[in-house]
Figure 1 (cartoon, rainbow, N blue to C red):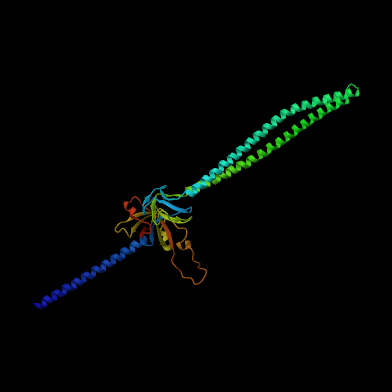
Figure 2 (figure 1 turned 120 degrees about the horizontal axis):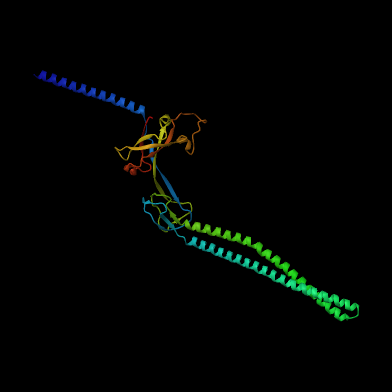
Length: 349
């Protein structure tokens, strides 16, 4: 009885081992066949990350921070004010530039009035010239008449000398007016020649004022696009310098950069549908579309690209960056953040 019971349990054990081993072998074969079929018709890479534009906001002027109007990781819209820098110094420069414009405009008004005044002087002198010419002609006629009378002994030398003096005075007065007209013309031309220079000065002053207003506008730092602000490291009263990075912004637009091996690129094409799995979001597949393939390997865009013509050559399989557009209609796509690791699977066309 004991021998029979032992044989039965021995046979049951062998049967269990045999069935288990068979199941393991069959499962292994099925799994191997599945992997073979899957990877024969699909390309996969885990060298992929979610990307977003990360834009540093740079200070364009040096000054003390007056106010900070954002919170860390806050979503902001394009044009929202982020930081205000103390603008008193820059407003003073704008006021100074505006005062110089007003001074230059007053100078040009003075020049224009000078031109008008000298032009009026010319007109007045020309009217006086006609009267002086008539007076000179009359004095000459009188002098010629007395000269003839003196020859006929009908007038005295004293009378002749008097009319000659009158003629000389009239002629001098005529020449004086003629000379003053020439001087007035010269003054008018000189004043008119200064007007274009004065106009150019006004334009230069206005350009300085525009530049001062532009620099003043740099004291108000706004969001360049809709997105999230990053870490807050600033405080009111802190001195910032021109060119200093103040805060970083992360865009709403996101995509995946997948670095496929060069041997996989032949199976990829623009417009091809792919599936994405993020490490941070388990048991969920995202869909995406191949948007573009890099024109060169990632190594070629590095700071020091490889030069295989020098030293010993070791062949290294290169990777080609592929840009994949994420289907943002999936509500869970909002959970994807820049830098997250992603597994990309592309089915052969």
